[in-house]
Image (cartoon, rainbow, N blue to C red):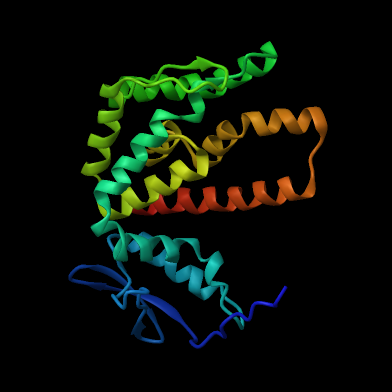
Length: 236
């Protein structure tokens, strides 16, 4: 496998300035540009400072793939404005196959653990957002109420581009619209949501032991969850 050559750090300092459209991140006084050559400008100072901190933490080379907040901001600025309807539809698909709705047939201990982790958030989504999802036993797909899917879509289109971008990413990270919505609304932390989404994985690890690859994937997901938490806190 060819070794990846990381770009060299070309700046000394990253800082934030307030502009008419929000808060821009500068490198040695020059604005960062998105891949589409738009100035990287975000709606809150807290988020801008978190992104600037990503650039400040870089060493002699730039780990662009590891700069999660910067990559999310690029998507929110360059892509989300033109794909809002598609993202809202993607959220409804996750709701239609939400991981929190699929309970194990057996053993009973696993099913009990799943319900302890998932039912509170299904109940919350139904009460607060009108997203009532019906759990099923086993892996056979079961249609969810159309009104609930419409409620997910209706909520998604009310969000600004930065919240919608992160909400969609959270769905893919957790396999759950319910858990993603709970994070976006600030009623659950991303680490708790990650643990809830990994109930089945943790059960399997307890039965058969952990392998290095699975542990590495989990560690990467944990880092992503931490970035997601920071993103929403900074937006609030």
